[in-house]
Image (cartoon, rainbow, N blue to C red; front, side, top):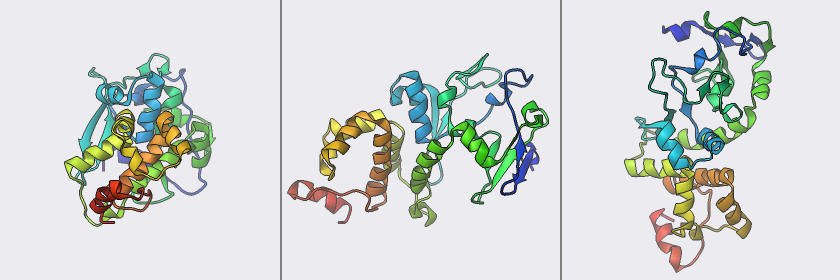
Length: 256
């Protein structure tokens, strides 16, 4: 059993845990170093908007991407190359992107239990003074306080990709499909260019209002990206192709 596992306590439904982190604690900020933080597409969307940089610039400068055994791209936050392996957004006063911090940072010290739906674990490290506080929370109270709802809504839609039956049946993405998924879900600026500059968006049966939103709204584009991946990589009927000879090749490619 790992040291981390020893510090984990399973929470029963409705059971409360204690936690309260603030600047006056001696251990403030320590949990923001030497840790693997996996980023969801919605995490990247929120974080890079805080910095006012493109998705490509954010991914290049602040993340590391790896391919899993299933061919899925996994994106991790790149830690600073210092002795503590600190988070690049960590300052003396705490998190510099706190309002747009990732889902995993919002949830800490609570973690979903592996392979058990609606079950959670809470980390109770002896070195964490926050877990020794008197303030009590249920998991739902903690989620509401930390603004998790919007993240979980967006992440649940991404889970329709990562937990797709294609993978459950042993499927694996090749590198080309992995790159397409990465662009459609993480590198939204490149995905928008792909759709509009090359006019690929014209193949889909979309009304003018939807097209305008895809051009201007990154969240709308991300939602479309999820559907685009499911439609083109997994052949799910979540989008419609326009009729006509111009689009016959696309329909034929998908076996329609």
